[in-house]
Image (cartoon, rainbow, N blue to C red; front, side, top):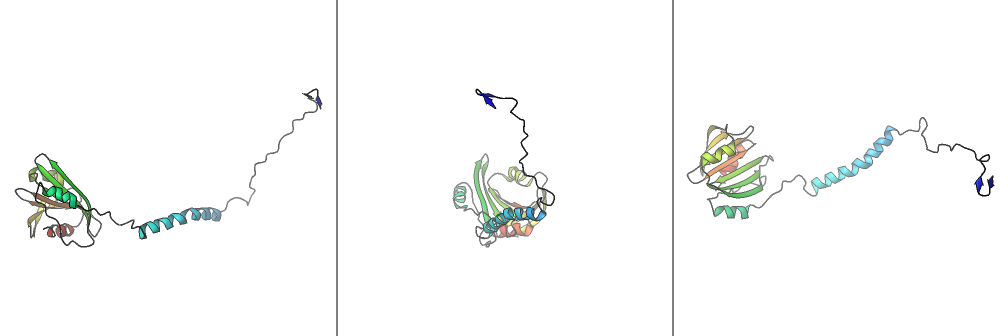
Length: 192
């Protein structure tokens, strides 16, 4: 009862409020089928997006660059040879030119048809200074390979890498990569 705005303590009761949170009983839990359905709802759109990315947008295709501006700049400092007739499986992926003490260096990165990276280095830096940095300190000559541009020395370079080197008086050309020597020879033979 309420008297003069006061609550009568005799009339108030401490009634327990029943717990209203829903609980699942036995046999009402989530089944493995429900979990698989939830996962499928998430994974199917992701799979579709990946398929579209690879097929329509060329997601696996290598990024090809146009090296012409970099090569033009390099030709002002050194004699440059470029590969001709490599085929559609070869892609130019990078091109940098740098002037440094003792000369200048042009670096062109390629992907061969097997998607292996190969680097073509052309430099006016003396070979004695250039080769340890390009091939590693433990590089060993394995033999020779002849092309129209000259006789190349085949090297076992850093672990997993092979290299071809054409050393001249004013320019050194290095073809190096983690690929079969035949791919290096193909690139070296295409230089004109």
